[in-house]
Length: 80
Image (cartoon, rainbow, N blue to C red; front, side, top):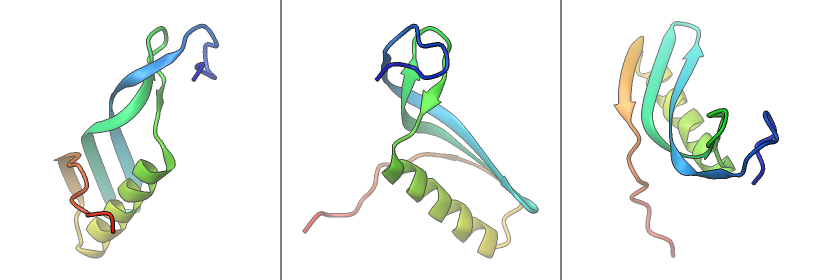
């Protein structure tokens, strides 16, 4: 896809570090699969990855996590 920020380059598969902050929770997730612009570095996540990050953040908030740094792990779900 063409980067919507700089409009100068196509994005390529890469990884991002995502920081989610909600109330007293700060969750940093490294190695998140993303499309990354080679020119400006803007990162784009797909809907499935975004949904998973938000679910993980919700679980962490319910567990009382205040600050946590994680590495994104591939889904272990098996398609049926």
